[in-house]
Image (cartoon, rainbow, N blue to C red):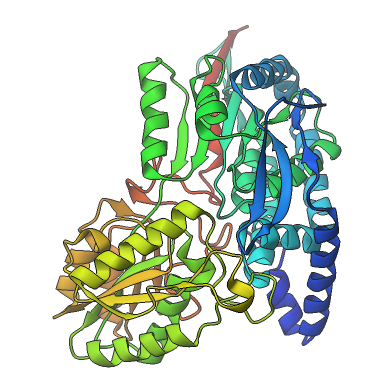
Length: 527
């Protein structure tokens, strides 16, 4: 296998190529029924290999049906975090000294279990966070790819340990990267398996021990992943799992004096506060954070219009826009503007809004009541300051009555400088703006504090080359009708951003990601 081949195919596409989609849907539907039957249980913390109960618990319900209880989860606090960090600290030396091959073997065993249980895991994601079946399965596949790629890269580099020979007679030197110690992993709700597993694997394979805290709204899939890692053979204390909210569990984890580094994916506000906490407390370890985006797409007068409409609709409205990479603002050449807007409105209205587990659903439920209130607020403002061409309403009819369902929303006549066109909303909401030429499109695309993803639709090679050179974005896509800005693949399209979209400039799923979890040391011995 060469460096650009993948060990784990996307499951849905593999079934599609085999012309056996019915088998995929049947297996998924069976898994949903099985997972539903097991919902509602109480779930403890995992500290030093033991299940630890707490006096307080919190309930998680399904965003697609708030009457469906996902489970009751232990509400960890500062004491639990301290116990978890203590266990991770105690296990750190032994885990660092574990051979590279042994670490990698454990993680690959975990990946194999994920592969065997992928329909169950995808069904869990659908019920817990509301992803439709294809996106939930892609979440599982991406998690597996993270484990396989990071394991392969760490093994290929021999753990970043190099014998550098004799710089002068009588001296022998080695140059190596060593783990920092204990890493806090704080994961988001929107990719509750892929990002949780990816960040955790990055820390573990490089020899760090971990205290992991998932998003409060998606602890079940993370708990299953933590269990899979543990059952694969991780020594006690190497991976500890604490559920709870940000103030009571997340903040104590960040502040703990023995937590050397944090990997975080989430909002800009929280990510920057973590970095500030590290600075204020004199911590010198890394804060590896991905912090969102306000992702632009330019539709040139040399674009294929049908492909542009399809790419923007899928980029803006898949998983109800609850992606850092979601298409947020579109700059369309004035010659194509009216036709593009008309077709985008028609495409948005044609998308199926429904429960995540329904086969035809494209626009799935949004995660929380706060998100629902935010949607209503920005749509009201859009009606006041712009023109809502389609969407803007909460859906409550029929089988949508017990969930949080909203319409994909297309807005025009909002100035580029308006907050609706500048702030990240994390909702199925896109603004469309006319431009006179590519110069204006690039200028307005770059006029943002974010720099995560960007897209261009053009058939002009000179425009494409210029855009690649001038756009200020970590991930850049041209003529991607399958989705203008979303859907990065591990290794092929490392995920990360510039400006306030990230803190390190090194991207998840890329060749320079793992080194961030380590620090360099040279060892010179005089013979």
